[in-house]
Length: 204
Ligand SMILES: [Fe+2]
Image 1 (cartoon, protein in one colour):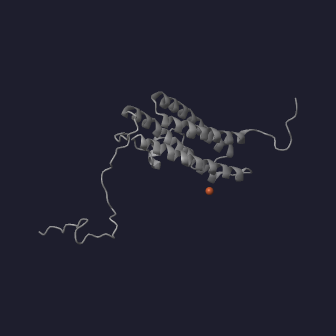
Image 2: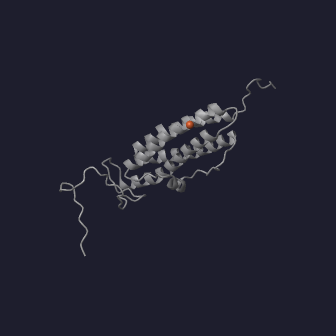
Image 3: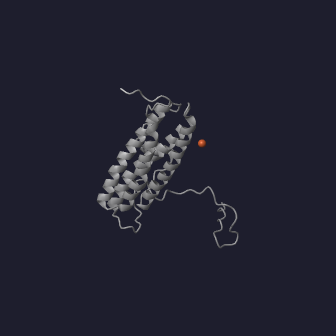
């Protein structure tokens, strides 16, 4: 029985420089949940593990809120359609940036960021919305509940990061995540106020 011809390797005659070497497969190089990579940033492994364990659920919640904004952007209806359609998409874009910042912070800390929708769905603490459309006040309430959960978790985690001396995570959580979420809550909440449009409320 003849042995199959050995594939030429780089530098040998017959090595093909122009054909893409796709369909490659190998074991993953870092398991989810580990913090084995130690970048020289002066933070202990225990601290980095704790931060990554808590940042990943926050990342999953933020990714879910991002998608909830796009769902709301597509499915919104009624007399305020135009302004809400635009507002929801603006908030979506800001949540996209937060997702990226949180995911990259986890990588900097030596962890592995949760990424794919299936994995995000397993980790997030946000309530799953129905596939169908909902009325505007329900859409906004759902978004506000998601913000409330994220804001509380962000404050708790920011405090913990400060206590442990992880200023980078603390700054990201306060300056970016917290402030953006608080601002979005303000813009949403004003749409649930019964402000008269034409006739001012009568004096008592
Ligand atoms: Fe759009």
